Image (cartoon, rainbow, N blue to C red; front, side, top):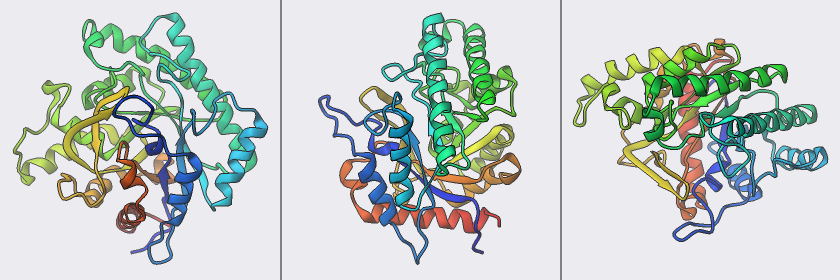
Length: 343
């Protein structure tokens, strides 16, 4: 049946992530163009309610003045959108650096969180933002260095995350760590759970679940010892394993990405070896999107989730510029809300 909640958002960062000027890369798609493409989507009169987005160039200068940020908020609101979750620029090469790094790297990481909190508050003052989290990860790409001393390195990431969570709490924000196989200490469902428990601040720092990335958790892609199914699994094997994983991470889940995955890894530029997002109707997609979403959205309202967001990183620009892409995504999001939403 139709529901009014959660609100349906589209991510702006597919216009950025993996894009650039290096050999083999496609150019970024501007924030304005991503807003236009999102606003044009329409399924029987239902449109996207809002956007989530990454706080870095070329979409946003993290050092922008309040006036410049308010102008961006006006542009977003002009399309009838609200702003939900924001991606803090924690990666090396943006503002931040590794949460597992030395004191200088840690300070850069915390600086990125402070910047995200400042921008969130400007948007809230404007009125364009009323809900959502600030997304982070360990910003330590790859697991080789982490594996040199897993216990100590997880403790180091957790210490940085605790300081970040205190900054967020003092600014009225919540942080969500997005589990992806490419980020050290967050590269398997078990290591992600260990990190969340080590931080131990569930009221301020939780988990961002993405259907594509957590599917690779299930397969144990970067941690075979934590695989819950093996290649060639049957549906009878899949669902008990999937529910086992979700049951452990769902209590921590405060932000949710609807996505599809074909069981492969994919990347471009500096953002390599991560879960491959597929179009919502990709025939190679491994997930029953609506059914899988229901596992994560159980009790979502009680955990403060007020919106869900589509994530489809590293699609070719021709796919992103095709209106059919966004109508299909919106139709899928509506189906998720009809099945598992609330009023």
